[in-house]
Length: 282
Image (cartoon, rainbow, N blue to C red; front, side, top):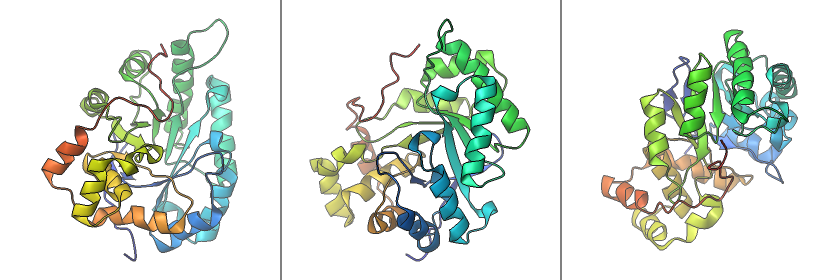
């Protein structure tokens, strides 16, 4: 595999997001060498980071060093709840752009549905913050805008309170956490569904059925999980700081799971979260 030939998914903004990306994270979730390798050697063009991860400036440095044209890249970053509110959100976005060394973002996400603002409901603060993202979108600073970890009731409230429906909702998605009702809701409302933690933070790699399928397809358990996610139409962003794993993850576009195996993997859903659970946020 020399270069990743990655299919894209159309957003209601008119932009097209690569269905497979490379996720950054905090707590040691960044390797400059690995990101450069992904961009230069694997053809990765979709990078997903966040202010919360503390590596936007490093990602910007890698983009500049990679030699990849800006127009060929898709860069997503996220707004942390500490910056919710209209003015704070505008300022935080401009600062993210500056750290990344970019004039615009391909996608800007509200990172989490809760907002701890004394005397105000989370719904009020989400609506005010979303209006800032709408303005950033209309100004062209953010080519697309969306949310992360939002459930149906959060999305319904935004629809009632604001004018632009989120272009994408990014949530935890793996064989044990397949929120099909949320997926269906998003598709019905023209919201692209994005998934993170496709390997369930490693928990999926030792599951006997996944290991059995890996053997059947002569692939790794990680490749089975990522391929399953992509085949379900989910924009998938596995995270890795290891060059060999990044290359391995990119190779999922070179094979297809038969329908019955997709159904088998779908049946592994048990509702567990390996990341944040937004269920109790009003």
